[in-house]
Length: 342
Image (cartoon, rainbow, N blue to C red):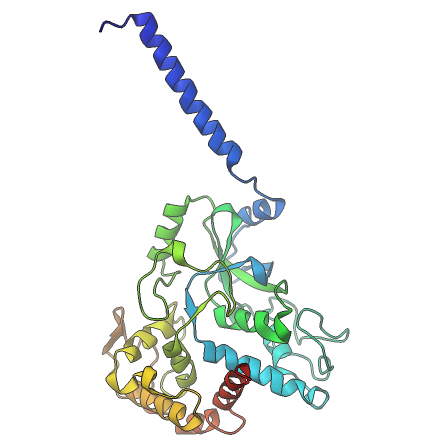
């Protein structure tokens, strides 16, 4: 069939009009950026010596890992709960000390937060930290600003999940201070996740060591959103006993150890009663002994060597004894875990 030049021009015009209309419709249906999103996207990143700090709500934080070690959070919550029972006698309550530290303010000032019923979101009027916000940036957690101003947490999933779960879960909108390591908000989603992978700022394995996509990451921190990786908890309890993070440690250091421990037949945690203090302590000791038995150049996981991951040359028995003491971290974790079933 012969088509005239006029008809061809008309068809082309109609086609271009249709494409433009579709594009305009897509733009029109895209949610408008809020003032908060625009402000986050304009955040200027500082330097290592003078980092840019930012105040965010806990419910603004998006995880960059799908799982945490629940028992690590249970330890924190167990200790917070134990202190609440005689809070007036505790000069520096742990939960407020943790908040001061996370905000780069050092420790909590004695006798300023030991008030019954005080929450992180509603601290006592006299609550004070030893230093100003951001004074100790090395203690602070880090975030990356992503497309549409989404705030991605790259360090501090356990600490901030503990804050969120504390006080009966009333701290969802608690404001905390963080360091901004990067602003990648100008990238589209595909380029953003490629950059995050390239810079080792995202961990795409779930609590069973199965690979996931960035789209499968949870949208919030906390126990209701993040999965559980019991080997990540095991690594937490071996810190200072079988390994110690070196200066300038790699991101997700504990997950490399967890991957390695997961492959050891003697440490099949599915066969260990993690509610029994003796059984759990034995697993921790076995893990620490395995770490200390490595040679510095031995590859642990992901191409990382024992030296890079901070393996100790021998097990620190004093630290182990402190861990499993009646008032140690392990007892708090187990006590809190048991309380959940009551």
